[in-house]
Image 1 (spheres, rainbow, N blue to C red):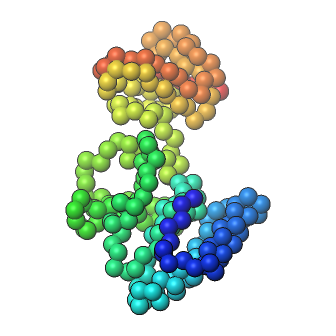
Image 2 (image 1 turned 45 degrees about the vertical axis):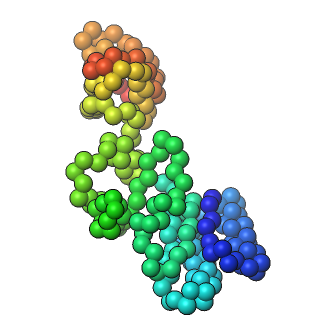
Image 3 (image 1 turned 90 degrees about the vertical axis):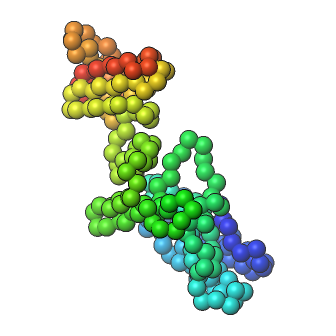
Length: 220
């Protein structure tokens, strides 16, 4: 958890911050509640306390609370409080990104500009995603799929097709490929019928560049 707050915090503010996060930890560990069930009141308390403090210091009524939420819940991993003049795009420079990770944001911007080029909005029962960019990387769509609860078979940028009984992968570059299955499956050579693996949840294949593999599978 990363907390970024005004540098002018006094002892009372620090004590309040500690009490709030201790309470949040108790909610997370001992209450049995889901993160989305307790994140709103915790964030509300934090926002009210620090918004009031920052407003007095800045002599401004405009306050923004920028948060980075976990993928599987609404609990924040980053909280940044700024004045209302700070644009959302400027906060991206203050985030620390984990290597090999993709982050889905509710808004994206063209480099050097403030026009929204990517936006996401949660609606009742579904999430709307909109973009001006037709060339988003495959890794973005994998992250988007995971956030929607879709199973992702491979983390590589290959050409990949899957049906209810068969899958096909064409390797974009040489190297080992690991396929992950949502359930245990039996794998077969589709041409000979030979059983290649039983009750497999993953399958590893060393491939040459542009090599294609086709597998038939059956759930157990």
